[in-house]
Length: 110
Image (cartoon, rainbow, N blue to C red; front, side, top):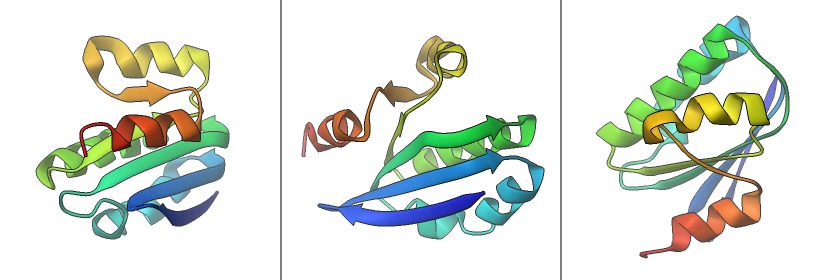
């Protein structure tokens, strides 16, 4: 798994490429503070994610908790349909179809 981050007008855009599994989830977990800044806006792009294991799902939940603790806003994009239904159940995550749509959501209200 590869993680690349960029800044898009004050939004942290994190793109996951490859399998988000136990090993890669542990690597990302070590950098949660860098990925989710206090009062920040974060967009996780899963478009290039080839597999999401249980550990990968736990990582997404950890990122959501970190965002809430940091009072940051978190949006996911590029989520496969089967996973999207699970992640949006009870408004657990805000999920958009594209990075551009995610940026638009994060820019609303700012």
